[in-house]
Image 1 (cartoon, rainbow, N blue to C red):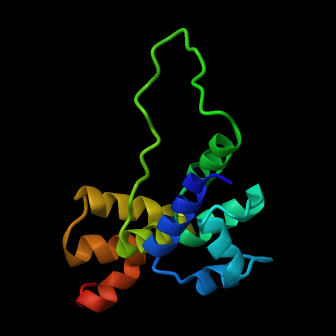
Image 2 (image 1 turned 30 degrees about the horizontal axis):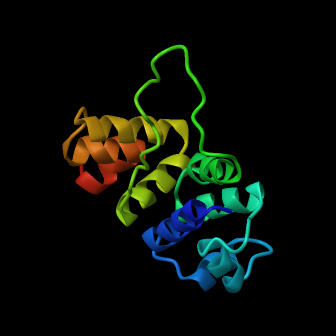
Length: 146
């Protein structure tokens, strides 16, 4: 495993505010020692383990898997007939609050997701708009409207 993958694992873990032990508990078959070795580039993890780490830390699976693939192959560039698109290798850094919003969004049903998008776009504002979007008619109970 290349040091690049290890550095990405450590960055993802610390970004998620997890210790090596906490992360290991979330990944079946890995110990804190294994996480430490992987971060130092001394242990090569399987794709399944990298996917589990990505899920547990809130980073994209592609970022870890691509780094693992790059680390196992020569760094030579492949010739390209056309101009490559803008690089998409930059990782999106999320705050803890943003990660929580993504988790809640993914767990919500379609109606709630649609309502949340409208609120974020500013299409629904105020107590009636926000609560009405999220709670439906139950918002009337809170606002005293009939």
